Each structure stands twice: as C-alpha cells, then as structure tokens.
Image 1 (tube, helix red, strand yellow):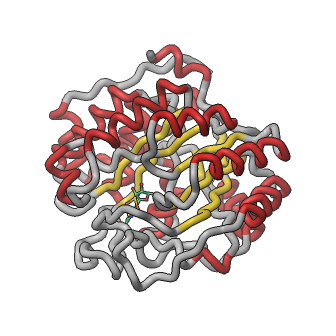
Image 2 (cartoon, helix red, strand yellow):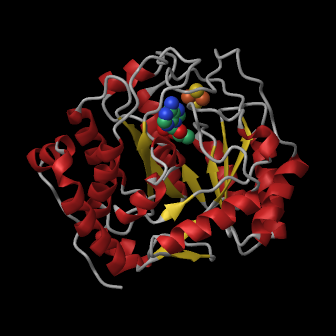
Image 3 (cartoon, rainbow, N blue to C red):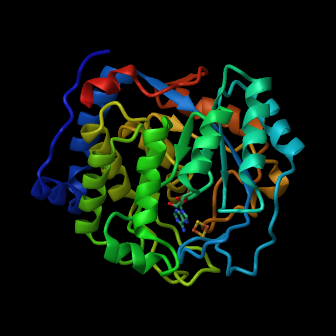
Amino acid sequence: MGFVKAENFTDQELLNFIKDDSYNEYLAKKADKVRQEIYGKDVYVRGLIEFTNFCKNDCYYCGIRKSNSNIERYRLSFDEILMCAKIGYKLGYRTFVLQGGEDLSYKDEDICKIVEEIKKIHPDCAITLSIGERSKKSYKKFFEAGADRFLLREESSSKDHYYKIHPKEMSFENRRKALFDLKEIGFQVGGGFMVDSPYQTDEDLISDLRFLQKLKPDMIGIGPYLSQHDTPFKNMKNGSYKKTLRLISILRLMFPYCLIPATTALGTINPFGREEGLKAGANVLMPNLSPTSYRELYSLYDNKICTGDEAAECRNCLELRIKKAGYNIVTHRGDVSFYKKMYE
Ligand code: 5AD
Ligand code: FES
C-alpha cells in the first residue's frame, strides 16, 4: 500500500474523457494500477437487503416511485430482515446494506431496533443504511444505534438537472445537506449518480465530480440510467455502458482510496458489466440477500439481474466471476482505506 496522488483533472480533460469512447482502455489501465496500489486485488462484498419497496417520493426515473400503482408493495418483517442477515453471515458477508424506498412507516426507533439487533447478533459486521433523506436528528439516532455507513446518492449536483429528474416537492438543497450532515455525525458516507440519466449533459457530470471533491465521500456508487416501463421516463434511452466504465476509472483516479462498487445496473446493461467494472477500477460488489420472492418487486429499472437466484447461488456465482477476473473476495468488514486521511 502506498500513497497515490489523487488526479486533479481540469474541466477540459474531464470533458474529453467523458465524451470519447476511445479513452476506455487508457483510463482503465491507469485506474487499475491505482486501485492495485491501495487495495491490491481485493474485492469487498456487501450483502444487500432490500427491505421495503414503499416510497413516499416520486423520482421520475425510479420504478418504486409512489405513483407507480402497477407494482405490488412489500415490507420485510423484523424477523425476515434478521434472517437475511443470518443467511448472509453464514455465506461470509460482514457488511449488510439495508436499502429501501423512503418509507416513513419505519419510525426512527424501528430502524434503530433493526440496527441494534443485527449488531447484537453479528458484532463483527458493519451496517450500511440506504434509506434516503431524514433529519439530522434521526441520522444521529441511527449512528448511535450502531449504523456505520450511509449511502445517499446526490443523483445530480446541478440544480437545473436535479429538477428535471425529480418533482419540485423534493429538495436539491436538502439532499446535499443530508450528505454533509451524515459526514459530520461520523458515518462513512457514499454519494453517487446515474450516468446518462435523462437530460444530463456532460457539464452536469463534471459538476457531479466537483461536488464529490467537496464532499470527500468514502464510497461512490454510479451506474447507467436504465429505463423502467412504469415511469414517466419509460421511453428514455438507457445510459451508455462504456461511458459508465470510463467514469468508474475517472472516479478511481480522482478518489484513489474510495470504495467504488461495480453496480447491479452495470451488470444489467452488460452480462460482464460487473467484471469489467472491477477491471475499470471498482472494488466492491453488492449481491442481493433479499428473499427471492420479493426480488422482482424491487424493480428500480427493467431487466434487473439476479432476481431469481438464492443468496447462496449469488455468492457462488460472484466468487467464480471474481476469481476468473483475477481478483479475490474479502470477507472482513472492508472499511475505507486508512490512507484516506492522507487525502484530506
Ligand atoms: N436506472 C438506474 N439506476 C436507478 N436508480 C433508481 N432508478 C434507477 C434507474 N431507473 C438508482 C438511483 C438510486 C439507486 C438506489 O438506484 O441512483 O440512488
Ligand atoms: Fe423513492 Fe426516488 S422514488 S426516493
């Protein structure tokens, strides 16, 4: 492990990289080298528990938005969530990501109870929450209950663009503030965005990268925008696979220490997307642990992969894929490199 300087690309350099498919190999090679310096061949796995598909928001791109009356809604019970974690623990996961729509039927106390109970049974595990915007006070309670990390993609750092993909009832400012609140409280924080979400320009992407430079997150999740047939954006084009890979490499170069997943969306747009994501500089995979009977219902976008596979099948499949691509699965918590401090 060494100190690798974070690249500070100019806007023009970024623009050239973002626009041009011929940079993929060049960027991936550089990014893989940087990742290798800090994290070697290690790939961190996180067990994803999609515990509710109820959502009070109405993001235009998202299949579980509240106005979608064509999906069946579900909530996992407290015991079902614990069971997912137990199965996950047996399979070697030491991080659980509790993800859901913004479902206020879970009061702060309910979330705390889930976190506390998982921590009590599996004290060597990290818990990541991905449950959207709540007040700073609520976030503090979750942290005190034992949650370690929080994923909240900013989705767009350009105000104009933000309101092209979100209804006016949602707040651009609040989302950004939430990320800084989470950081201040002590969470390891993850931001991110979709690549080629409708109306996104290359300049918007640059502003996303600049925002992340200000936030200095521990984790950054990106994936291509994928259309979902029951949303207002159903006729919008899917994002570019190669551009997403390029952006993963750019992120690795700008944020050498970051935990960057090869996302399910990337694996959905291309059958080898996750492997190629790793080769482009990603170092995290987040396989699904939710019971298969609910998987189809967490349909943020169409054709999502792995909806029929049991947790154990996903685990085996991933292990084979990761090994074949030349990487190793890590089965400890996998916190962000301690070297992150050197970049602050
Ligand atoms: N295509 C790709 N990604 C999506 N997300 C939501 N809807 C879609 C879609 N249609 C992403 C958002 C969210 C994350 C959980 O999934 O960026 O933050
Ligand atoms: Fe649920 Fe966007 S539709 S947060």
